[in-house]
Length: 67
Image (cartoon, rainbow, N blue to C red; front, side):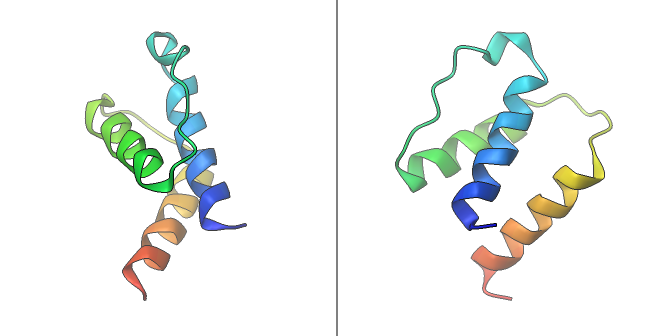
């Protein structure tokens, strides 16, 4: 899975958790897409999330960190 595909998955998962976000359009620009992801993570209420999400988020972060 590419970084772009990981980020799409993460964003779509976060959007699907809350009906208020159903009209959000995911930008094509990678920087804008990352900013959307960060915004969604920052406003998300604390609650359980799938292991798949956590793994993909970790994989995404590890790759942008260069580790």
